[in-house]
Image 1: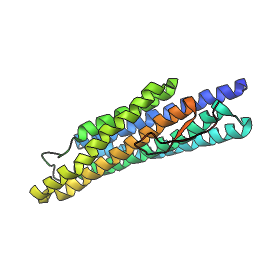
Image 2: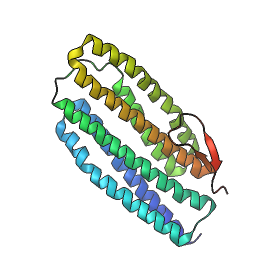
Image 3: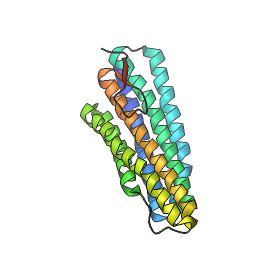
Image 4: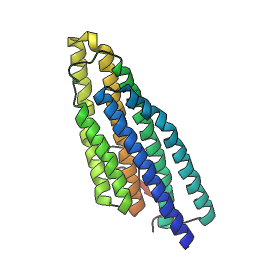
Length: 230
């Protein structure tokens, strides 16, 4: 491929990493709003989503223009396809961060409960680390790091499965906390979905490296085909 194409792909990579940084910050702020019971931080996350969305659109337009102009094959084609898919997952993670911020803002107006009956902090920390590692894997097309993200998803899923039983028991013991507990369950669901999107990004890195195409949001190694192998 031409020097111009190489420059375009480097530009796209930088744009995706910039978008990833914006999404990481949005997620950090959403968790901080929850932990600190700070509605102002939550509002900042909600308002910042517009910039994330516009950046995603900008990357998609740049990527599609590059596809049309250069008509790449093999690795170069996989690269652009992976970029498009990653952008979609990053935008969805941004939406989930907004959802968490909205839940946090609501909880700020409610009576604080003394104990969240599942390990929300561990779940949030693991989901954040999965996103960071997925983006780091993209930088050098690090398949080992990408595989570690896929493995880490099991820990988040385990916390999520335990959450229902623990919250249900707490609801029976403390029915006056029902509203708050439902919102914490919703936050747990957002974090579980967020981890799935981080796995998708990691699997896009694996697709970029070797052409393996994974079924999105799957917890198992569902290789269903090879595209642009070469």
